[in-house]
Image 1 (cartoon, one colour):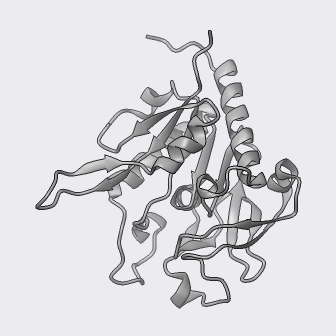
Image 2 (cartoon, rainbow, N blue to C red):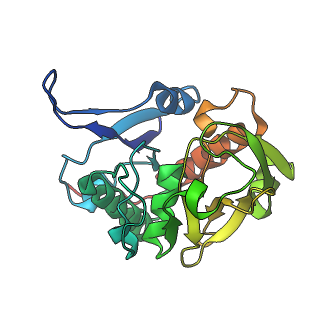
Image 3 (cartoon, helix red, strand yellow):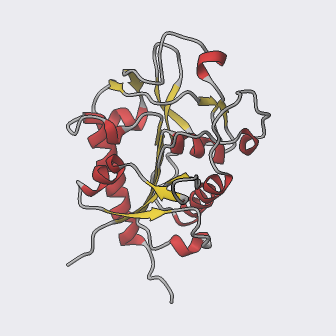
Length: 243
């Protein structure tokens, strides 16, 4: 019997306070999104200081979203949004190392919300640090659903040209990273909602949260199916791991 697919997921982090110790955690919706299709989730906390090659047993990687933002020095900009809530640099460094593994080994990677932004930063792109102040517009990206125009690969796998997506972010892509194709945009304000590198077996990120959409949402189902199929191909084609 073939073992289930193993998909690594990066975790959130909360530092210690007066009531409890520091902790790593992940929202249940991420796990159920994958597990509902038979995959098994491996949590990837940044405290596991392994060489990227030590993660090559993974069939795929999901970079999850997070409340805190990527510190702007990672995309070579000064902080303009204050006071801000910034992601622990150790998490950013882990995610960048996992993306390097993905590039080197062809491991499929799906980026969601903050993970989508990390993928863009990894490829040399930059971010709008605060959409409401820097790019005010008709869409409230913090808490309301809105339309997204789908193009290219995403349109092809979903079979539709426009979808309604959710929104839980205040940052977004400013400069698109190297070799990334835009596959989704918000028609009302032009914000980039999805990117992909078609040269990679699966290197794709979306700004919204497909794991928090309705279970029958067409785009969420298509994204998951395409990602898991890429994970299966990766396992099939991966050479045996040396001990």
